Image 1 (cartoon, rainbow, N blue to C red):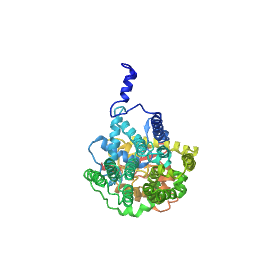
Image 2 (cartoon, one colour):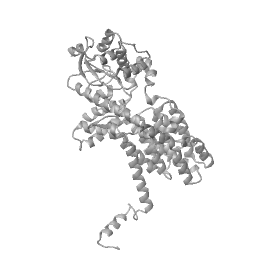
Image 3 (cartoon, rainbow, N blue to C red):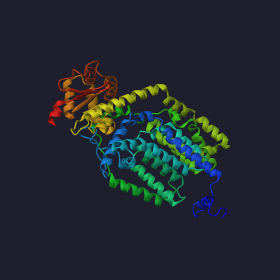
Length: 533
């Protein structure tokens, strides 16, 4: 030993532990680890760009209505461990819904809430914090996997994953949505497909990832699995272990969640087309829209990958080519596929950049290609949008106040605008007639009919049939616009129930009683229903 019985000797002994590291890390290794740390921090920080909208006045608000529905499920699981939520009684009251949502994301978020409970002042705060942070943490895990999986140019791949607007949105702060878990599953599954046959470990990891993805959702993962199997049909080595992992997870899914195939309600079939036009993830996307999420390099990517596959005999390039073309077409049809298009484009980047003769040239082209993404970030951070976010914060606080007035042991089923109903259900614990899912469309349609009704008797009939005890009224201009778009009818020029209740809170119809109002909302009680309780 050069330095016996000294601290330096102990340090050198540590670096020479058998089976760990044969010598101290080189400058190259330290540089690589530093780059990884920087990119992981960048990934998480960019996903917290909206923290001012999520954490307001000591409270936690989520990004969209579906998040509150998800957190209501997580709340049930957190309060009663071992529960598997098969039915939503908190939407489409009183019938409820049989959703396609499954248990893995519920329990993952509840487990994180259990960790936060050690430091949070109460269970509700821990639950809210878990809902806010679950997706950014999953985004960070996905980025870490991509670094582990990638080879040359993996820094470029990870930088793209960190800054892509659509990938940021999928894993943004305050968005507890299963898409963030799906991205991690699909990154592992697709990455394992490129290494199929390399080792049994990759085969098992791929099978488990596909299985978990299918457990979470039988939509996007099923299509991606079909595309992967069609391309890799002749690659059978390692498929035994792969199939064992896949089938094992699917059997567990069947045991835990069962097989649910809800029948389509006639109201859902009648109004689904109108409803889908109000949902951003179901909107069509133009080619310029795709470039805002991926950059200009998406345009020549198919040609470059085809050239690599033909000239360099690179089979992996062909794999990414097939996925990119299919996902670009699917994203143009439905925006929700954009998450997976951007993920696949990120994973294809290391190979894609090899088409350039010089590394510096590839990096310059990549940097220039990010201009549309920079423009998208500029649009999101525009002061005009900031003003809209301030207004949204005010509405959230006002709606939270409404929810607190409804809390209690007495059941008060609520009729409210559909996009506000999930938050009311989560904060108040009361069931709502409307909801943000397509399964709750029957209740959403009835709520829209109530707000547009010019006939008090018809409006009261809806309240009676839906066993409503409380009516929440919001800005009639917006409620009328959304309701008329859903129902496909022009709102009445005057006398619409939602407008009358908002503008004349102290002169409601005889069957309603004003219970609470603030600058943005009016709350009415329906006494006949309360008397029946």
